[in-house]
Image 1 (tube, rainbow, N blue to C red):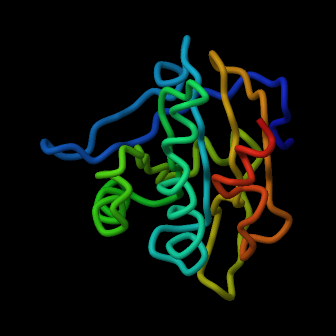
Image 2 (cartoon, rainbow, N blue to C red):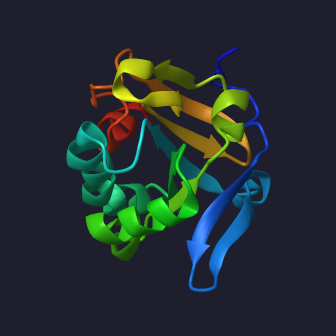
Length: 162
């Protein structure tokens, strides 16, 4: 079942690339008592994810800061090494976005946001979405109908929904 606005965010342990290597990150700890944006996408280095989705949150980071958002987190079903390299190559890390890998799709499946597209080599990947989470509760949730589209899940789309 897909997570909905008003639901508590499912807990999961994701992985973040650090200077010392991959480090576990409990999602519940990241969102407790905080206002956090989480956006998910099908895969690092893929077309729309790299050319539209990530850039939209780099562009709008200041707007989210002004609305009291404590952190913007990108989640993808990729390993932390890929996520770290992708954050560096897109400039997202330097812009202040956090990239977390969900290599076993633990969070993605628990939230009911998974899909597969075998012809494209995408198995158990994340649907394209953006959400605002306040103290662990989803207050805004925008999910794209098609993973190749980035409109309601873009930074601008989420801002318009807040």
